[in-house]
Amino acid sequence: MFPSGRRLDRATALFISLLAVGFLLATFDVRSSSGGATTVIRDGAQTLAAPVQNGIDFVVRPVVGFVDGISNIAGLRDQNERLAAEVRRLEDRLRETSALERRVAELEAINDVAAPQDLATVTARIYSAGPSTFDQIRFINKGSADGIVVGQAVVDENGLVGRVDLVTRLSARVRLITDPLISVGVRVQDTNQTGAVTGRGDELLRLDMFDASKPVREGAVVITDGSRFPPGVVVGYVNETKAADVGFTLRTTVDPAARFSELDFIKVIVGWSPLDADPETGDRLVDPPSFTDPGSERQ
Image (tube, rainbow, N blue to C red):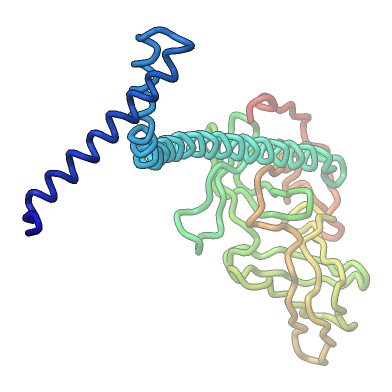
C-alpha cells in the first residue's frame, strides 16, 4: 500500500531539510579552507540573509524616495515663497524709483517755465484734489505765507491751469479752468481775434467769440488776452474749425493745454494782478514790488 499523504509530506519535508543542511555544510566546508569558523558562519549568514535584504530594500526604497521627494517639495516651496517676496520687494523699489524720477522730471519741467513778462512766481505742489471727481479744484501746499492771494493765475509747463480762489497761511485752493464758474478772456493767436473760454467740467472748453469776422481753424493756439489773467499764457488749441456768421456768436470748442489728470507741480504767478494791466493790451502799467519766495525750499 502506498503511504498516506500526511506521511509523504513529512518524509518529503525531512528529505528537503537534510539536503539543505548538507548544502550548508558543504558551503561551510569549502569556505573554511580560506578562513576561520567565524568567517564561515558570517559568510553563511550573509548568504542566507541576502535575498531577504534585497526584498526589504525593494519594498522600502520607493517609500524612502517618496518621503525624500515630499521633503524636497516642501523645501522648494519655501524657497519659491522667499524668492517671490524678494521679487515683490524689488518691484516696489523699482516703482518708488520710477515715481521719484518722474517727480524730479516734473519739477525740473515746471522750474523751466518762464512766466510772461518775467513775472514773479511761486512753485507749489498739488497735494489733494476735490472730494469728488466732479469738483474742478486742486489744493496746493503754499499759501499766504508765500505771497499767494486770491485771484492769482496758476500755470504748469503746458499752459494755464486755473486761478487761486481760497487761501490759508500754508495752503491754497485752485479752481481749474474746466470749472463752469471760470471764464477766461482769450485771443486766437493767428487771427488776433478775442473771445472768452468757459469750462464745462470733463468736456472740452467752450470758446465764444462775439465780434469774430474771420473763421477759427482747428489747431489754432488760444492764449490769454490779459483781461483776467496775465497775457500770453497758452489756454489750449481749437478743436473744431468754425466760420463766423454775421450777427451770430462764433462758438467752438478748445482742448485745454494743461493735462489736469497729471498735475503734480504748478506755478502761481504772484507778480501780476488785473488791476496792474492796461485794459486794451493787458500789459502792466506799473511794476509790482519784488517778491522773494520764503517757502522755495519747502515742497
